[in-house]
Amino acid sequence: MPQGNLRMSARWSGIAQAVIATAAGIALLYFLRDILVPFILALVLAVLVNALVRFIGNQSPWAPRWASVLVAGLLVLLCAVVTAIIFVQGAAQMVKQAPQLIERLDEIVMQLGSASGLRRPLHLATLTGSVNVPQLAGSLLGSVGNFFSGLLLMITYFIFMIAGRRHVQEKFKRLAESTGGGNVENAALQIADDIETYLWVQTVTGVMIGAASALAMFAVGLDHTIFWTIVLFLLCYIPIIGVTVGSVVPALFALLQFPTWWQAAVVFGVIQAVAFIVGNFIYPRMQAETQNIDPVATLLSLAFWGYLWGLTGAFLAVPLTLIVMMICAHFPRARWVAILLSNDGRVAFPGEVPKKKRRRGKS
Image (cartoon, rainbow, N blue to C red; front, side):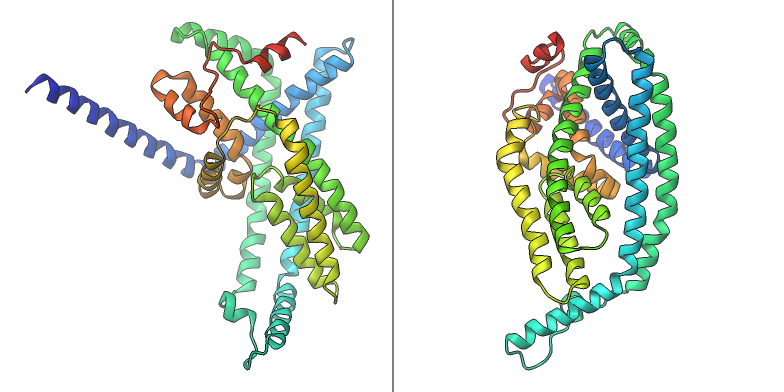
C-alpha cells in the first residue's frame, strides 16, 4: 500500500477513535449523572470554601488555618442546605397552586379574546393543548426524594473534599512527576481560579438583582417573596435566559394572587430593569476579561449540559465549559477546542500565567 494511503488511513482511524471516545464519554456523563452531579456541585462548593478561606486569611492573619477552613466550610454548607430546603418547600407549594394558575391564565386569555372581537371564546387549552396538571404535579413532587438523596450525597462528597484538601497539592505534584508533565498543578490552579472568579461575579450580581427584586415584590405584597428571591438569585447563575425566566414566573403568580394586572407588571418590569442595569453597566466591569468564553459557545454549552443533566446542568454549564476549555488547552492536540470555545482565541496554556493570575499571586 502506498505511504500516502497509509497516512490517510491512520488519520481516519484516529478521527474514528476520537468520535467513539467522545460518544462514550457523553454516554457515561448521562448514565452516571446521579453520581456526577452531586460531585460537581460539591466541587463548586469546595472552590467557594477556598475563596472564603483566603478572604478570612487576608482579614485575620492571626486566625489558625484549620479554624478558617472549618468556619468557611460550615458557612458554605449551611447556606447551600438552607437554600435547597427553602427552594424545595417553595416549589412544592407552587406546584399545588398550578391548577389555579392555569384557570387564571385561561380567564385572562378569554378576556383578551373578547377584547379582540373574536366570535368564539379563546381558551388556554386551544393554545397549549391539554395539560395533565395532576400528573405533572405528581412527577415534580415525586422528584423531591431524589433531590434529597442527591443533596445527602453532595454533602458527603463535600465533607471528604474539605477533609482531604491539604493533600491535593501533594497529589498534583506526584501526578506531574508520574506523567512527566510539569503543568498539571498549574492547569488545576487555573481552572479553580477561573471558576472562583465566575462564581464570585455571578454571586455579587445575583445578590444585587435579587435584593432589588425582593424590594419590588415586597412592595406589591407578593406571597412567598423569600422563595422567589432565592429562585431569582439561583437563576442568575444560568447565563442569558436565567433572569428572563426569573422575571416571568413570579409575574405569572402575581396574576394569580391579585385581581388586577399592575402588580405583575411592576414585578416583571423592575426585575427586567435591574437586570438590564446590572448586565450592561456593572457586570462587564466586574467580569473584565476573566470569563473568556464565546457567547455562542455559552449557548451551546447551556443546551448541551441542560440536556444531559437537566436544570442542574444549566446551572453548571459555564463552570463545566471552563473546565473543558482548560483541559483541552493542556493537551496540544486538543488546544483547537479551547481556542474555539474562547471569546478572543487567546487561551492561556499550561505553563503560561495570565497577568491577572500574577497580580493575584503577589497579593
